Image 1 (tube, rainbow, N blue to C red):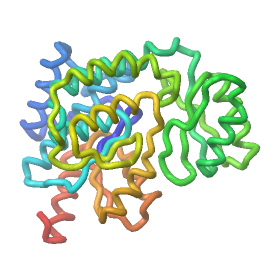
Image 2: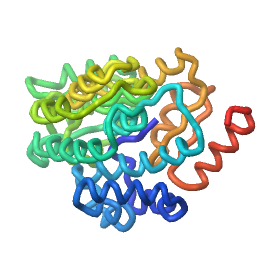
Image 3: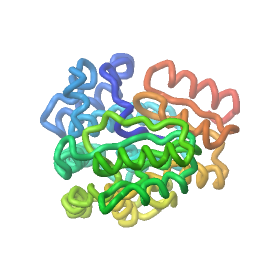
Image 4: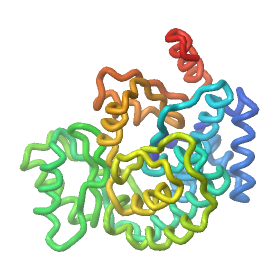
Length: 309
C-alpha cells in the first residue's frame, strides 16, 4: 500500500538512494521525466518547496516506487495493491497499469490543477476524531448552508477528514463537536481535496488521464472511490478521474482486502500513516512499512519466518 500527500518529510528516500543503486536510478528517472531535480527537493528540501502540492505529489510517488522496486527485485509479489489518494497512482505503477515516467508527470499536473481549483485560503480541511462517519456526514449536511463541505477521507473508525469552503468546514467542525466528536483538528493543507470544489481539477485532468498509455493491472488495485478491485486498465483510469472530487474510502478498502483474505500489509513510501490506520481497522493484521533499508530488513525477516520469501 502506498501513502498520499501529508506523508512527506525532507530527507525522505535518501537512505534508500544511498544504500541501493536501484533506488537512486528511480530518482534519476523522475528528475529526467520532470526536467526538474525532484530528488534534491526530497533529500534536501527546503520544506516550503517540498510541501508545494505540485512537488509533493511526484516526490512521494518517487519514494514509494523506489521502495516498491526493491521489494520487486527481491521477488515479492503482492496479491493486491492499494494507495491513499495520490498513492493510488503509485499502486498503479506497481501493478503495471501506468508507466513510472507517465505517472510522475501526470501527478505533477494533478497537484497543480488541484491547487489552482480553489483560491488559496478559501478552502479548508479538518480531521474529525471520535465520531461515527454517518454523524460526520450529518454534521456536514447541517452546517453547509448552501456551501460545500463533505467527508473527504473515511480513514478508519472514528477518523474522518472533511473538506470544503473555509467557513463551512468551521461550522461543520462545531456541529461535529455538538454531536459528540472528541476532537476537531484543522489540517495544514493548501487546498480542500476530495470534495466538490475539486471538480474543475477533475475536468482538467480527465482528458490527460484518458490519453495515457495504460495496460490492465498485473494484480488488482483496490480503488479509493468504491473500495473495489480494478482489474481493467480503462476502469482504473475512470476511478482515478472520479477520485479527484470524491471521498477516499480507505476504511472500506482495507475491509475489502481483509474480506479477500489479506493478512499482511506493507506500506511503501515515506512515513507510516497508512500502517497506523490499518492497525485501527484490522487489529489482527500484520503491518510493516518500508521507507529505509531497515524497513526492507523487517519485510525479509517476516516473510522468511513464515516461509513465504
